[in-house]
Picture 1 (spheres, helix red, strand yellow):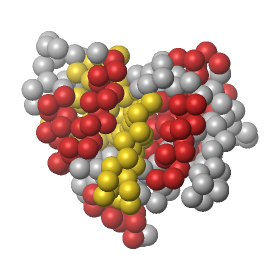
Picture 2 (cartoon, rainbow, N blue to C red; picture 1 turned 90 degrees about the horizontal axis):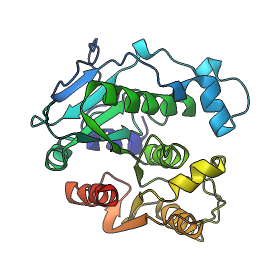
Picture 3 (cartoon, one colour; picture 1 turned 120 degrees about the vertical axis):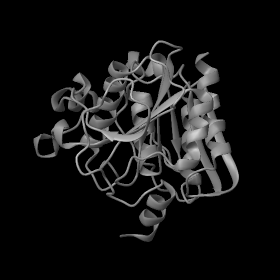
Length: 278
């Protein structure tokens, strides 16, 4: 296992691939930290529908998946009340095989009344399509199982998961109210950071109406002075802003490397998302 991946797995609160033996289907309104199986595929995770949105060439059948074989990690604060105030949701896309919430972030989610949900076994080693589809499935099922505010459903991720989060925030603004990519970003724009001169990974430009909506929603890009993706993150943020993103925020953290941010800095990113939709 590459050293960087092992380090990220440790930071994310568990060993790579450390899943429950046989998670049960998601019980509505369950609280705490647990794993579960979801029961309903999102219409958007259909291979043909996803392929059309992303203009993906060729068949996706070899990378398709059965939701019954997948596991999701959740954290629902104990104060959640099915009959109380709706909660927000953060769909997390991990670069490693566990989607478990890092324990230091639990208090951050408690204080902001947010639910964490993340697909397991959806790290950087897996094909783009199932990683994307599982995040879409997570967003659908959490709304069916919990009392949530649809205007506060966000997507985030770390490193390669941050790249995925950017794609979801920009390509699915009707599903996600904003995005929070951390130490990894991608764009539909042609971006070459001066530091490397290499083209930042791209995805196809969304349809005009989709892009118009995405431009108005919050996109918080986080990097750090020691992050080897810093040049990409800064250049992509500048490109998004230049292309009309009016709610773009770049958080460049002094002393932060290619790593999970501290709870305080993670909270800064969440607060920018939440303040944009209040």
